[in-house]
Image (cartoon, rainbow, N blue to C red; front, side, top):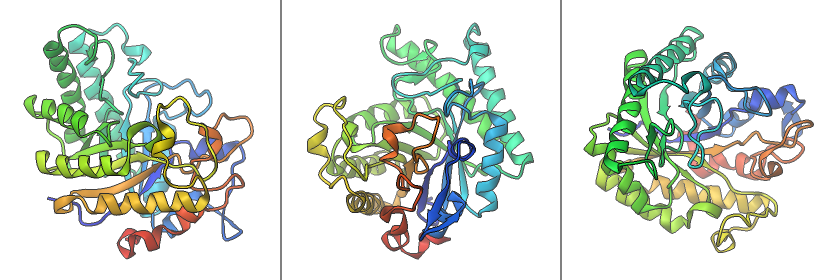
Length: 348
């Protein structure tokens, strides 16, 4: 069963931290709350990450109290809330899936129990704060597994055994969501939004291990991952192969010239101008591509770090050139065009 309307929004996990450092946002020259501005332009879903015990350096601040306060703002604004469990004290991604310090010495049984209990506790705390998640993402970009080395899928021993271990840890998180928030949808997230082969490999294994989930969540950054045609091919194949809704939970494109030299072949994939209008055109085409997924299985697009404007005292990803606000905090053409890009459904 597909979602009743299309999700548009972003991961705004650093918003409170940036605000404390002096970040201010405007729309048409008028100061306003960033969430209110994004809601006004069609955003109806926001994502927040959750670390276990972050060190509060830079933007690694997303502990449970921080997340609950920001999640309450999202819910009070009438938007949907996607909770992203990292199961780490810091960033979990394809290159880093480190266990929280407090879980470092646990065996597999105890580690699975810790994943389950942390999941239940977090959702219960959020629900008590009036901010229960509508979608819960169990792990972040877990293509290589999670909670290394126990749940590592590459270069970590017998592949079948490692998949069994990973599936056990993943199932513990899913069971925690189902127990604490039975109405929430469960998303499993990999970084291969433009790779048909990698997406099929991962979710074929998920099916073999009988993992219960509702949504395929993908990342897509063109300088790293591939072309829009690659995304379209992957969405069409995944919708056919797995019969699940598909949500792009991370994407971005710069509004100013940006050096992505660490990504091989990136220039050929950046076919939109790196200008405010080019950023808008990229987002418009990506939304249209996801919406065209067969059987209505493409259910949304969430921008990564739309609030990331340059702020005194903080390192900002690519200097803020991928944000949906300019360097002065003004809403970008891409953000202001969202309502017309997607039509009135996005404003529900």
